[in-house]
Length: 113
Length: 113
Image (cartoon, rainbow over all chains, first blue to last red; front, side, top):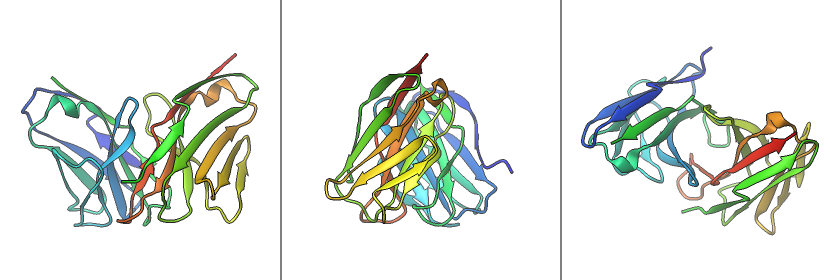
């Protein structure tokens, strides 16, 4: 049981490049989330999903897109990376409600130059 | 947008001392208040949570105290240990659209020998 995994662990992009971050969970959780963590800002929700085929915007969705084609996977895309998107990105999942424990992945450290 | 104010930003406590971290919120969708713990290089993990039909919950050395009228809750770490050195986040269920937690900005705790 791997829990929540994220790929890649590190990435450096140039401004304007695109990339996709992959999150996978093997706990059969309905809810999945993408957060970004910046110094002094805590964890901010980018997008989330309450089930396969559904997505919704969080607190800071601009510049990001997501897809949840399979229940176990949640993809975060950056179409045209900007230096302001330099951050550590965390994926999380929970059973079926926000009051259920959220299980976090190990994070992806992204640098945009 | 839900506001969650967490203090202090950082905290240094001697081994054996008491660590206290506070959170204040404006509104909540319902009464559920978790604390997450994050070690360097790792994703956050649920430490303790309260669903307050009581004003306090204790698990080992960790206690959540809740004051509903003041819209505040706090984490107390008794007999703090160097292994408790981590960043701690409080969280509050967001009002409005379901399925979201709003996290505090985090408290970096260092327990010295």
